[in-house]
Length: 348
Image 1 (cartoon, rainbow, N blue to C red):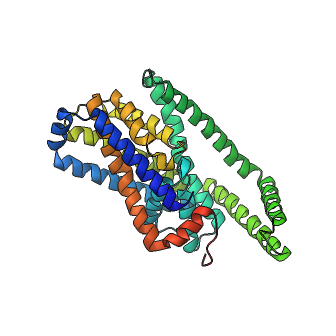
Image 2 (cartoon, helix red, strand yellow):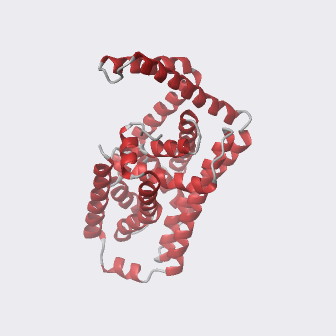
Image 3 (spheres, rainbow, N blue to C red):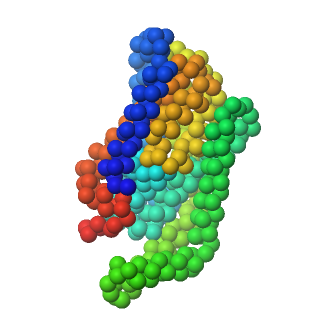
């Protein structure tokens, strides 16, 4: 799937589901509540999104310092927006990493370390959600009651997360096996004349060995000499999620809806946990429709759908738009397509 196709699918699914939600759930009371919304609190919701960006950028900086590398705060903000854009145009929100690794590589950080830094950033979020979701379901076991679809999704996500953690631990514990597997893939490609010389194969072997060593070194540095920076990254990860989860209660307050802050946090933690592993680009369609379904726990049905769309606008659409600007200005669409396809640009 090309970037353009991924972006088009994202927009079509998001707007299509949004239109369906508005058609089926919005009534006169909904419109009245929106028109009477507190403008200051809407601005406050935007400021909370800025706080989330700051925490995420700071997390990138901390993880880079843990790996004995330097990432400036402005670059951290760029990496945050690139992640949103890459996630929006790829299934399972998996596309942010290549853009971030490339941006880090252009700033002199080896590919292996870049992969480890971006992977640790993602795994920290998943780890926090993995701990938060069972706690939320324990304290409110009726949260998913009546929705077999959501119950099935939560079970599916737990399986995927366990498999992901098992793979990451395996790569750290058995780097030699990973190197052998990588060489086998290279030799398999050699059979199809994708690599046209033995010299090229040898160079690729050397590059793979070096970058896998950098990848392992990054984890060892983080858990040894970079422990304090790693702790800071964990704290910023928690603050990042709390900032994102605070947008919804602020929006609810803006339209006069009552809420219990802890309950809104728990519901959104479950929801984000699910969205990380939805196969549509950027979880589009499912994010809007699932939000309308799940947020009905927190508010009347005639408000749940539109609040799902508005919250998504604040927490995702603005960041994705900023990511599009960064991709076009910083990388160019052609380079972005190459990264998306896994092709190393000539100027990299």
